[in-house]
Image (cartoon, rainbow, N blue to C red; front, side):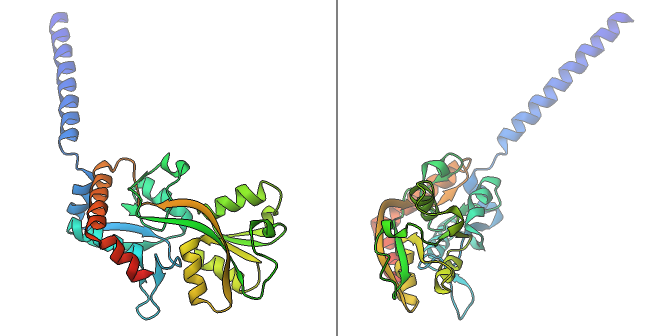
Length: 266
């Protein structure tokens, strides 16, 4: 009887091991690539942050987001053969949304940085930019970064403009931390300047130019050369999607499609 119990116990162990191995193998076998998962869903979910012209801005007539980044998102979805869903989010939430899988990618004039690249993957660059200082036309006392000492400044929180102000003005003691007004949407940072609650706005140079062109009484007084590259932000596990996007970006560049987008929005 003792021998029979030992036989059955050994048999049970073998069965359990076999089931676990089968389940594990099955999981590997059914794994979908990041591209296949999007195609199966039928929708590409893209996160962005409005009020950042000419990359993403609300059309006053349709009340829908439009801009270079929106056209780029639509083009990627078209190449995938799926619909596109645009989710307008606070800029500071985008990286987290990519990491948790809430969105497939973020296209939001986002600069490729070393810190961001530690937790997410980026496509190859699709645009270059610097930072710029925007003030009201009536101001004559602010003409360079040195003139920002002791001033109140608005920034788009979590952006490279925010980081530049922190590193070059706050940490150096030139500007008090409390005098830096941070906003999740770039358009709110501009409104802070329009309302005279701050003395200057520091923001990406193409966006600064768009604001000045569309807002009466504003001017760009200085371009801070930071030589940044915008990239499409994706989950680090989305290896196939990153490769797909890079291939498409290269094709669009070769065919002149990227220049067409730039010409359309600039």
